Image 1 (spheres, rainbow, N blue to C red):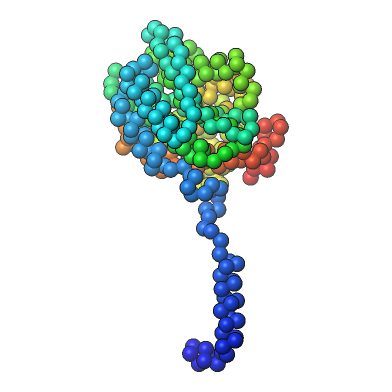
Image 2 (cartoon, rainbow, N blue to C red; image 1 turned 180 degrees about the vertical axis):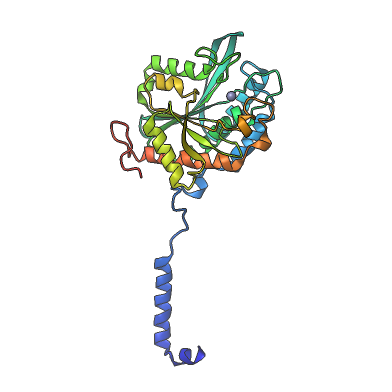
Length: 324
Ligand SMILES: [Zn+2]
């Protein structure tokens, strides 16, 4: 419209310019995902976690007491040290149906400003099997997940103290029972109960088999209801409701020893791996059936859950208060 522009005086043109510029400043704010509360640089990186999963699988089958698991442990320790995370080895000898087997839990600690502890845990051993079983999802995904979460959490100072625990000996060596399986978590809970530290633990979140390219996490009915609610609500708010399903399953996993001690604990697990769960505990549990996106989804859900726990929006009875 050159005719109208020509009629504008120098002053009114300047005035319009100032108003437009001011409006541009007022309306500008940094781009932000509406539901993910962290800055992008502090976000869980699914690709980086997936690269770790591949590195873990490259060690081959990693059953308790094997050289491959020892090398895996050294590698995990290096990764954590490189990220500036304090790590402790907790060796013990497990009485198994195959005789005594030396095992080692790895405990990464990220001290917060307060003494309350939130534990995020998973296993890094793979099931001892006659066939070649590399456990990309079962054993690989949980360890890779914890490594990436450690890298993310160590970047900032938090109100909560985080313990990221890599359990050895989750898998049964012969036949799953109350005494065959969960060796690492049973040892861990027994040790910290006798030291009196467990009273500071506010919540325990266990992850297992979370990299399935077809992610279906069913609510586990053993898990503490308010903690389940918290995680599943975050998933829904992030738009991941279709991956976090309410159809209940009964899962026995590394959260059980904590529950038995009366601690709030839950298991995030996709025990729906391949058609009819056929990829579970078989040679089909390989990298190509896993996905960085699945790791990222679970990473974001847990990150936002931790942020809610940090914000202390939980009542003294442990129930979610203002979480919508
Ligand atoms: Zn397993």
